[in-house]
Length: 59
Image (cartoon, rainbow, N blue to C red; front, side, top):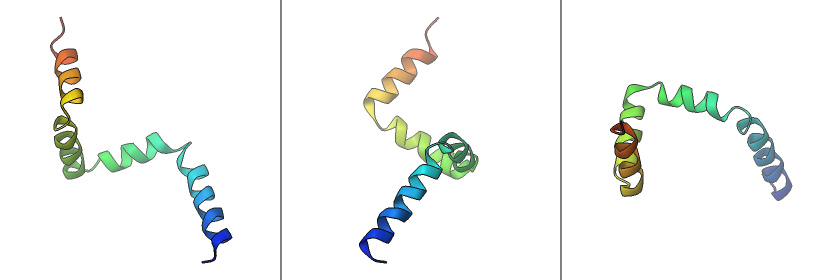
């Protein structure tokens, strides 16, 4: 692909994915193994882990 074609394809892909990002996320995280990996990766980030734990056990 030449330079212009790459940018046009990339722009079209972005224009498709932005409005459908939550639908795409639901499809991807519908898979048990991918969801398990995503949660494990998120819990490895200290700021996300503390925010989640704080929100989960707040009375």
